[in-house]
Length: 458
Image (cartoon, rainbow, N blue to C red; front, side, top):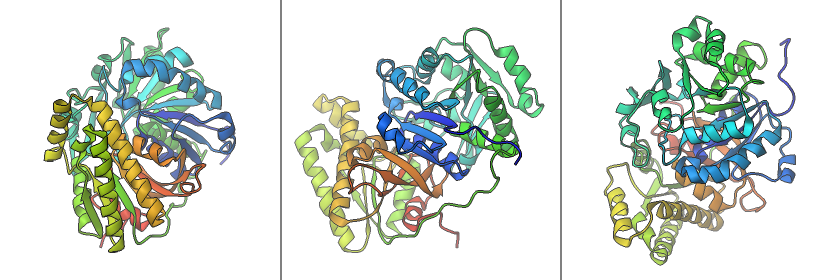
């Protein structure tokens, strides 16, 4: 390689949910670029221990928050990321673009990033073919169960309980969340090598958002070239881990990094502990599979979370059941629901209505409770590997564990690697932890975490 990447951090990022944040770190780490993800903004002293990392991120919860929350919290986070000194700052969003004007607003986050960081324009890249996300003429498609769906017809996202996606054209969807001008560099433009000329035509003085299509490695590499070669002008980008896939594709094409870094894998263990707050049908399939392969499923009655005393008792019951399962040689799997049609989902909604409880507060309590359950299981059993399923759940549960940073140690499934936990608490430092988003992973994902890597087909 005759060229070289600049020294120091190449990219700093904030992820709008915990599991998606880990996906950025995964892409960079598997390309041979050491990365770390903090679970809260780190102090300058804490950053010193990770000064050699090429990618430094902060996992967040903005996807579940209001524009008012973003107004208060995101500007100082963007300023802290700028202080890291990386040439690119990435606001990482879910690869299914979960957002709405009133909650998880990507448009508001972009506006705040522009106000803080003053980029000339903001590239927006959501496509990530490695995990079944494709964008064509501005429309996002996602694969689930082996079949591709336009986002507004996606069996999960079209009926998401918080941010249902009724518009697949991301430029139109985003226009509901920001008054900023939104342009598009489409697939033919990328394939014809005209992306730079198209960018020049779209740029003006108002820092527009420039959405970029992507369906394959060549289009991703073209997008990565556009972003990297214009990094001094933009400096701030938004999108999924497709941003990192695109940058890696460009860097490899340009001879800046090797094409084939070694596969990361760790040794298997006989048992792990799992907690799940996911309502996704993907996770439901994984729970069903796990029960046939050495996991003991323990249902947690989430409706009891409307009352703090009842919830504490319910969490204690789950811990007791989990420890008994471990005594039988099984891996405990504590879960709140098996898919969106599980009666438990409606029961929780009704319990909140009857008690006059705020759903967001109850969901926070559920996430923290799952973290407390997992912590109690780990403290009593001495297990060294665990899994948390559910994007919002992962945020609350991981913080409840006392973990403050993660780094990748093994590939499990695209989007959800196995990580090493970093913590001041010696009980948690070195814990092997996987954070799994609702739509991520094959049916054997839980078993793969236990095995330390993907399970070879029989």
